[in-house]
Image (cartoon, rainbow, N blue to C red):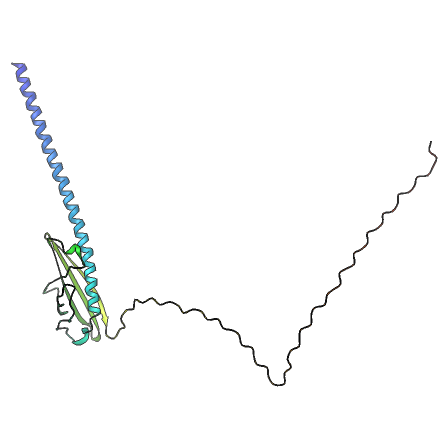
Length: 223
């Protein structure tokens, strides 16, 4: 009886350990899955934000290049320019306090044209203070993907009569060499004669070497 009871207790302990292990593995799997989902959502959010910046810059170029921009002081009429989807742009009268979002043409922005992504924009133009020749431009671009909203805002100015930016490269002109013109000779001046040729100096005569003196002849009686 004791041996049978010990076997049952051992089996019960093993079953509890298996259940605890399964629960721990489940929690670890759920945690890793949540981290992967959060990482993917963060990457998508950053990609959408980068595309929103590009879209805002494109809309800003439309406002700056609009030939009918200064046709009215309140910009109540549409600008008359169409986007890449063939839709006319609205007037520059949107406000963030009473938003009226417009659908953004996402032809040039593939990240914003995916399923579940909603991209919209607004823009506004107002005179800068009391200066009738300077306008303040504001653009908002909003993206919504899975309930995650992101609004990017850009501000700029436009001057009336300001020259359009030129993107043509300007190279320096080639350098021109100038030849010095001789000063004209006054009246009754003599033409300069030829310069005398230099005289050749004679080469120095070498000094003769001295003759060595003869050694004295020995004198005396030798055996």
